[in-house]
Image (cartoon, rainbow, N blue to C red; front, side):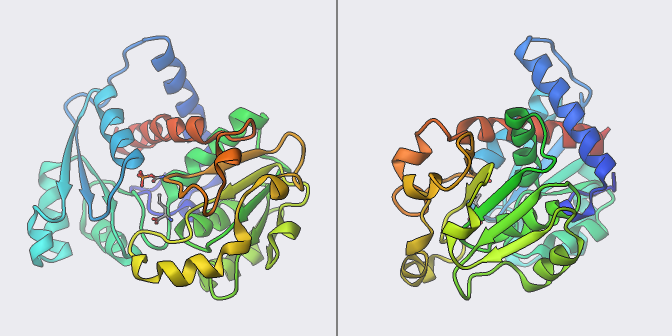
Length: 303
Ligand code: CP
Ligand code: NVA
């Protein structure tokens, strides 16, 4: 694995296997109460410019469980928020910390930070990608379905950071990806074009969600308005009306399909209460797995 984890696309197939195998072991050890502290004495910096429940808690708890310490650095309280440049910040922080997780707006910010940092940098979400999410979602699918090979994953809704990372994953793992997005809300054009060329089992882009979910093994959705897009909320809510995961959409998928959502959900918008709380939903197990998979990532990049 490279020094940094900024994008799913940067991983090799072998990296996926190593991370999943380690995550499996870490999850089992935690369940059995076996202490495992390979990162004793190490400190993880967490630079967060956006809100977070799952990412923040799972990284913070994860590093403690591995024997290390976390330092939460809200951009409001550091000199970054007052305009200190990325190269100075990255080089200085590299002298104190052993790795850093960044949640911010631009992907370029994390890439530049990683370029100047001598420590590993992990992407904890940008407007463009959410790699830790998709890595742990693949792990959840493997647990629930016994593997990902040959499955059909249908992503319904906004062509956002989560959708982009799904497209990147399809170039590394042999599952079939179908997406349904409204006009003007398609995934990043560059990522989509690359994915269309490189996806192992193919990617299809639909306008109608009913077409996309046909015979799906996994139905996935995310919010219609991501962090930073709040001003577009009304317009987006209108554009996405036909893209709700509800019982009639779910009925088009396979009988044993699982429903996933990275959370937080806007219940009644992109997904109904009935579906997210129903028997097909795995969203809480999915959220738990962020902890195990990110512990595996930290152990690999920080050791
Ligand atoms: N799914 C996810 O990244 O959740 P948070 O925004 O709560 O971290
Ligand atoms: N697409 C969402 C994901 C939140 C975890 C956002 O960026 O707000």
